[in-house]
Length: 293
Image (tube, rainbow, N blue to C red):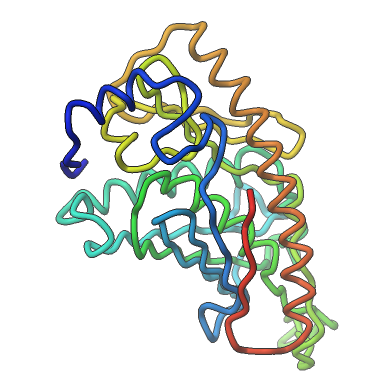
């Protein structure tokens, strides 16, 4: 992590502080944020999400592909993360690539292996045709809690991703080829209500904190990243950094992540409904709304 200049007094307060953080938040509070719709043209859905000083853009593109032979009746969701070197000095050289690979792995586990999204809905013809959703993530600025912001933006973006509607099959040399509607207002949405978000909890001093700033992350040796569904179920746990944790600490962090993650999911699901209504206005210009987590 890039060096954050803090005085000894600031470090002491960050590490030894109780339930009031430097910016006035409690340990379980998020910073203010907002969402921009239609951030990228020529995509099937795009979101720009800002939380505090962290700023990311997520865009989806839907293509026609062939199902994986091991899962012939399911579609595919692929993730690609680009950590711009201008977003943080940590992303220069291999630093950005390593973080991008880590984020892709966390998202793939959350969306592919947790079973919270029915990928069978992305299958058009078993063994032959399916939807392939490419999720491209661009990190514009890193101001702390990057993985959480990305996971929120990904869920929002998948929730408004427009899947072209199949109207029938056209037979070419005896094989059925999907025919898609030419009406731009005929599409389907992917059901992401039960998909998880990631709640990352760095341990600062004796306590775990939600939505850590860069200053708080610099005072933490490690953090735990939890995949949490709307009902508070924890689908995955990843340890990031060099920190070591006792069983009681992990149990406390899991309970905290479960509560916080359920609240975040409920907020995100409401925002998805609102964003879908905005998309029906057919206004290509970016539209903004507060995130208010």
